[in-house]
Length: 277
Image (cartoon, rainbow, N blue to C red; front, top):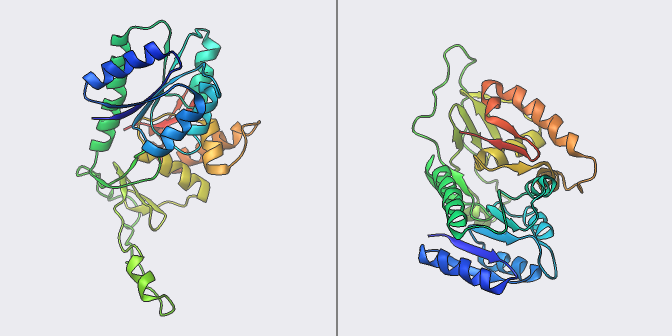
């Protein structure tokens, strides 16, 4: 089952959530303040974080913002704040779901199951090959039902094998060099990360570096909504201060280059973008 971090300063509530999650077979870690939560994420890399908004030391919003700079595991926010602007703000900084206090444990468990089920279905859409670094995300192997090249399109791209190491590379370095990489396949779209090549129905696409990085991030985590703030900080390194149109303009050009596949990149109102399958 999943490893789950529960961050809640109300000890009785935190213990209750832990007991119920463990009863469903999950491994549960607890934090009662913000700094401890960040430390536990670094050590344990949980599959899911249940995060209270009001915390001592560092509030849940700041924690969510920091986690989204480096990790993509789902986050469920718990809070007594019920205004729409608060819900939107929580989702905007990177939360995947939002539960207002008081809530029923049954509802929380149902939402946990729904999020973990979505993650599992995403990973089963094609066979995993190796783990990425961001919170357990995975490379995706080719899907068996991937669409073949369309006969009306340009000639299918013939990808040459990687060049052998040159003579000035040491023997130890040669043995560590990767020689193959399974592509991320989403229907007719194939992404070869080792070569930084993207093909659509066998035809190589001309993408800018940022368009390529956006596509890899979204296609690697289908169904996951990424906020503009996370995309800016993760791909551009900007602080979130008036640069949201940078993401939108790049996304518009990327969608256009992807043709009908570009329709799979959908806008999540008040949040950002997600890739749907």
